[in-house]
Amino acid sequence: DTGVSQNPRHKITKRGQNVTFRCDPISEHNRLYWYRQTLGQGPEFLTYFQNEAQLEKSRLLSDRFSAERPKGSFSTLEIQRTEQGDSAMYLCASSLALAGAHNEQFFGPGTRLTVL
Amino acid sequence: TQLLEQSPQFLSIQEGENLTVYCNSSSVFSSLQWYRQEPGEGPVLLVTVVTGGEVKKLKRLTFQFGDARKDSSLHITAAQPGDTGLYLCAGGPGGYQKVTFGTGTKLQVIP
Image (cartoon, each protein chain N blue to C red):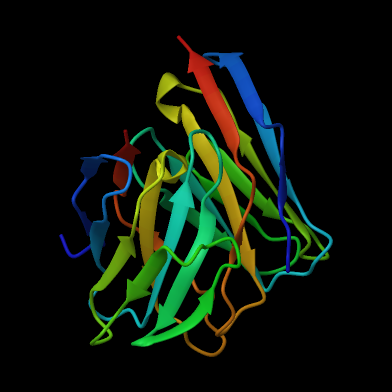
């Protein structure tokens, strides 16, 4: 199976600690997205990459959040000095963005973060 | 920013009933996707609609794209407990532009 993978699936941390999540997209996809989702709500956009370039970052994202995609393949999302309000599911998706394409996104299983 | 509103937000029905979920926007989309998400998992792509007025069927699920490509509907016939989940629509202007997700409809089908 060459779908989107995310690690870890679950992370429990104490308030104030830093956490890092990894996403491995579908190999031929050039675009990678990070979303945050709370229970019963739709995914909330955080940021996205076209290859290694970070094209957009949500204004809702504080400076404690940073994402990288150094070689245009896997990506990491780091949250520094976690707060209880950061508890959520963090979803990664990838797509093949081409002119005229429909930009269908394929999601990973998510990383569930719990901040105590 | 393109916004997508879904209705209803919550739906609890008995097995065998029919239902329709709506996805509406004031913006025109080049395409619109529907996803289903089960608890603890990522959304799974069900279908993409592209042409205004297009209808696509996936077993008991029927998807329609509005003529003006501003709205879409998902109709489920004879709902089954396995249909339970969060249904999300997502649309974008196409090409290199990112998509926007709807607010979601949480469906519960009671056996």
